[in-house]
Length: 283
Image (cartoon, rainbow, N blue to C red):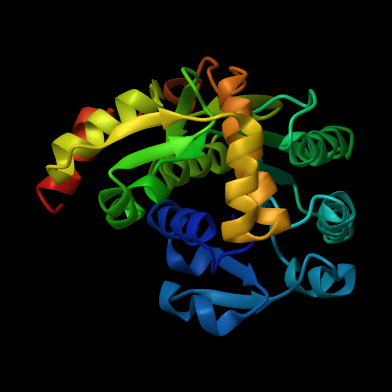
């Protein structure tokens, strides 16, 4: 079986490719991305293709049996068509199965809704395409909060508009393991899974960060409008709006859902005690 992973130069794509190599062997895993030089470290065949080009994907998917499609980033408006290019190229090349990385969330109106809607449309397009398929809806990566620790230390606070909402957080490594099982095992065909660990609040996140980094961070909730304005000033209109929308969705309870991680992976998701202990111990 030949498996391909799109966007293999990115954080999630490279993590999935590495896990797939362990499972299938390097000779049976193909990486696909826009800039192959950024994925050379994976030690596998890398093919160049851009989601915007069906022709490039026609070439990139030759000889592929199972395709892992990472959801496109950026503005949601062109995403559905970009994903459809990959689906059409997969059909042309006789790909047997598509595994798609979607996201947890509600299509009801928030500043994050357009991204959720674009993912749901792609999910439906895959479901009706005739392929075997398996779809994961990712929780929120916890790594950015860890990577942001120096700024948190400087500020002394974690400020956002999530309020008391809980988040089904996850890690790229845990997702990589789950998606590799979805690629491998036929029992996951036709299934849609929520993928994440224990849902925690922003106050609980602050406690974990404090124990790990010996800080005294406190969580401060602000209004959606205030947080959106601050994020846009810092990150620009598009990304600031998206980030504010994510925390608005958390506030609304959209990320506090049951996880199917253990059903997919055959083991429990890493606990946050274990995850943060490993960081503290330098593992």
